[in-house]
Length: 527
Image (tube, rainbow, N blue to C red):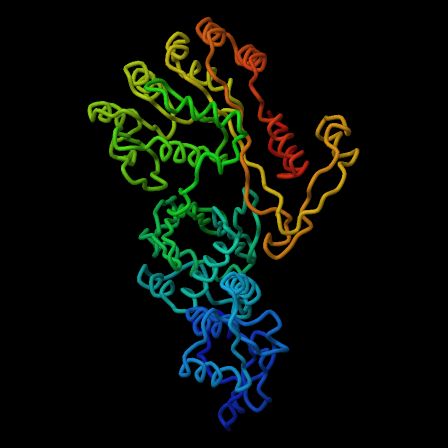
């Protein structure tokens, strides 16, 4: 295993400026290409092993101009012993400066990306796909260089606030990509020979069968980074070039978000808050996967959660744990489906029910019956717009009169990337952009666009904001639903009554400088 990863991840921490006969004879290349041994001490000789094992755990980080200045930045001055140890390993001329916490964290992200590990690609016999037994795979996955490599990749993904990490084997490479603000971004490309070791390490952490490569597997990893407790959902899938492994990152502290922070327009927020305080009925949140439906539901439950009410949820999976709320994990393999869970829930005397997703006729029927018998029910559907949810329920076999009697409102939503506030620039809307948006160029005079900076990873975007479309039940809309009208008629009636569409909300956020024309077109062109 010592030949897997170069000195950035495998060498012992030895003094960069050490001079003796042995050191001279065995001078080794560092990641920056300089040699240790008889060379004069070089403060630019920073390696991932020094950074990851010595500096980062102590909250110390090299300055961005470390190669020239030899400065290390920290929030508090290190002890005399630690300073002496670092100077012995790096350079006697190292200087320690106290910096702000935000600067230290920014530099941590910078150096984690700068000191990305390089894999030696010389020994073709290493890391072939076959191993004698599971024990050999476990030993491989437990090697220190592989552990450090996987932990480093996790740290890179978390620096980017990624929601997913994808380990994708190709013919010659192992690509590591992250989904950042809904867009896939490659953070590493490693030689394919490392794939078996990395996949085995991930499966070992998720307590999966590391010897099973022919069938898909699912698991989870509890991972702690500083004060953050992360829950990673792991999925493996056998492919032509090896197993594809995808990790869904769930930060349990991310649920502390209010409805207002989600980006709902004032009018929609006011209407929505009125609806969720109704004593009974059903509220549906619709949109594709990754449109923020779960976040909206959790923010809703946090808003209405109080001691006077009992709230029970049935989810698959339970993404975040909420205080004061009973949450049930659906598990189809043991017969605990959404429908079975709902039957048991209604015997628990709840006031509010939350169903992770309505997937079939049985679940829809029980949810509607619960709404009609005095419960407030929240759930999600996968549809393109709010009116499409009615058609979806009808396709499941639910009668129109039941839908019209139980529904309070349907909210459709999407997520668009938000312009980075640190590098945004104001400029006029171009003719081509207006044509792509199918609007009059005079309707939006100026827009904001990010030029790219270190905070946003040179993308010009940081974070996302929601687009919302709230369809509130009226007597006219209930009549259309009960008589079997299609989604277009229901949608037109809702617009006549004042409903703002997803596209209208997107154009308003474009005019407010929150997003860009490309994002509006990307997210709303199919609506």
